[in-house]
Length: 92
Image 1 (cartoon, helix red, strand yellow):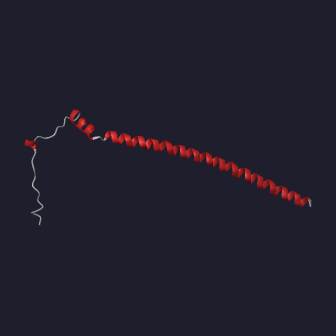
Image 2: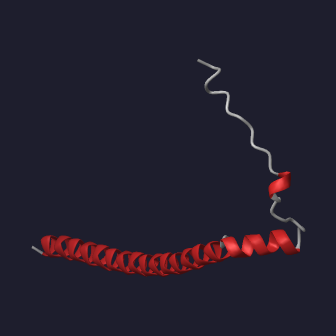
């Protein structure tokens, strides 16, 4: 009978240790999950900021302003514009 009691006690201790180990691992994984979710939120905010920034950099008026002021570009006059005829009719 005492042998059976010791065996049951050993099984009980093993189960208790397994339970403690699994609970610790679950808590550790939960903390990692929370950290990953926070990182995801951070990346989402950064992505939104980058999209807004890209929109601001690509505004037509800004591009035109840079072309005129920094690159000294200007729209061609009508006298400098040439129309090139299309060769679609000749290809048939």
